[in-house]
Image (cartoon, rainbow, N blue to C red; front, side, top):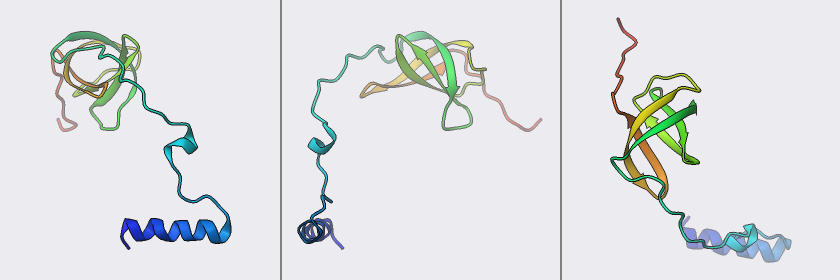
Length: 108
């Protein structure tokens, strides 16, 4: 079923059952805002406080200047402060790597 047909069916059900099925931005109170200024530039060196684990095994999330920064290739404890280099900035999402990359393996 194509999206057009799917929404056409939902609108027919809305009329039949008198229930709102097709939601819009207004239903959630969403409206456009200007994008916040970037707190960091690519290549910048920052001291980050590690606050939680990331999605991947060698990933952690840190905070600096009231922004969350995903730190890749790091092995640290929560609460540690790590000097990182910002590697990617896009739509206020920040990726970074430690200045001295600590690579490790589980095999010895």
